[in-house]
Length: 453
Image (cartoon, rainbow, N blue to C red; front, side, top):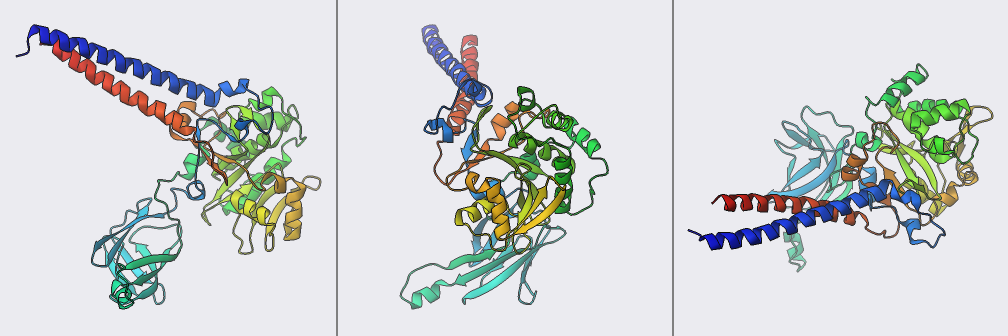
């Protein structure tokens, strides 16, 4: 039994511990609240005064640098997540999204013969060297595209003959799907506009029969792009506060009526709205980015998801560029274009451009495509050291939740150089708040229990 004096001492220290954890909880919450307000509101009172200002290349606490794969691969397309040995030279493959198949067949690409069949996608490698392309077929599951992996196998016995003590060597030369260890975001998450959003429903009504909803996605991109170009006032002027603070739907109405003027961001969000309304999942990209509501010099445009080719496609109303594609007809995304601009290589590249005067599309290839991009400043905007901010939704959408965006959808940044890791501050406060709150509750319960003894 604990004496009365012992219980009093225990209560005293428990009270101090409880107060300390409670104080930490409020401290972390205050820090988290400041970071949230900074990301969405407080930066509007700050000014970037020169290119040397360190905030020029820094976004906010709600952004982080990401790899090209994390930005351009999506959860809707299978990716190779992991492999592991489950027996002697027996390799199991793991995919994400998890492909829920009752069984798998592994075929040889050369003659379509069955190499293995079972509950899991597994390959039993022989004792001899092997160079083979394997086709992975899940039973009862329709895939966006065939999964094929060209692999090499070199057994340890062959290394031993050469005086080497290396283990069995498995490696992939070519794979038809992405490789991604981290969980990916879906195209719906990137678009950030649910089909039930009131503005989406109204935008779909406005489109009426101008869009063939059963057409291939690129054809629908052309149709939506034409609608946007024909129904906006393209006077390139600094937007009023009313335009800049408007939702995409209100922005469209202001530009369509001639009551408002706009620049790249305002034009991009109108396409973003109507593309998503037409079933084309589309996201927004901010070149050089923002500090909260503060706009930095740069550019604003879109990328639309083309499911037939499992790729994002650069779409830019401001530069009159509906989309670009290579000699194989594959649509190009923003980083594809940036790499071409950096290298100044446009052989085999075609741009579908829009002429405002004649209200027609003009196809420009090779040097003409390069000249078109240069005439519209893209060779300057995308060249060299840039920061691209890939956003989940748009903050002025009616269905946009700042809290949900802050907690779960950090803006992903691409840059060819290291960026400050400001997002770590957010997660330090967030996890600190959760842990200290839990510890406060536990200590409080213990204190109540001791008092009742």
